Length: 402
Image 1: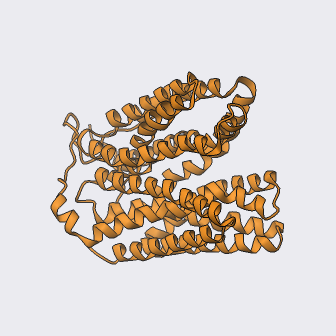
Image 2 (image 1 turned 90 degrees about the vertical axis):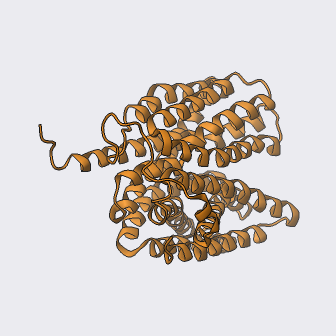
Image 3 (image 1 turned 180 degrees about the vertical axis):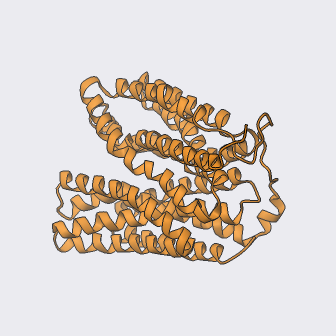
């Protein structure tokens, strides 16, 4: 029986949809940590530094795990690799629900759940999308899949808050573990199929072999690694400190939280819009628009010192969303274009892992400067420098060929 002519495109659309829904759940759970953080400080009596160490360890483990997950994807494919990742996420959350000390949470959430998040992170997921989508449509496809990250927080953050209020943070973690087992596990195992280049019945194996000697000698590769570290560092620095900064200049906490929620919603739209623009205008042009958005967001934060007008707060949400909407999706799309013959899983795993490293170090550095100086000027300057460095490195990679 002859297959319908549009079956490959239908398969690609299905993959993008499954990845969108998966990231909706994964990042919804990940970004709900801020709600649990408050419980650790207020209810358990742990210090801010001790409670933040749980998330910092989670991000560092994520950074180490993502490249290994990419290599595993190139060899065995998405179903077994992502299946293992989801099981580790569920195990980490379940063990967190039984934690009685900070050390227990460092092991369960910081280490075990961190490994699960690294396996199912943006880089590995982007490599799956890239296998199905041609470079001409890759930017918008990855953007649509990544849009799930912003929307997930709109559901899971308030859901986690309600669960904690009703049952406590331990039972809330148990409920999230059940979400992983009942919804996410079937989604990422049954929903994801082998790439169209793999014939039915064949053992999954990447069509390319990684030439490590050539990669390590290439300045293009190292520029991509620099761009990866600097891509998420400035975004997560603002994510972690934006509410505290706004409060320091006189913005009410509830208002600041509403601005952050609006930015998350707008980010989903910018993932899609800037992904589409990257296919039409080029990856570097779309990335530059996003970089301008982040720099504008920093300027807006400085303007807030003169008065927290609603217009400025709305402008900040818009500019921040524009900035985040071009960062992770734009970097993984570029990596897939330039290094698609050198193992999509491995390359995007490295990009995702180093992005996680930047996301861990950036907020810490901004916080350290805040503690030492008593203000955020130094931290905002660090954000600006990271944006500029990432933009220069990104343009170098985009204009090069490997």
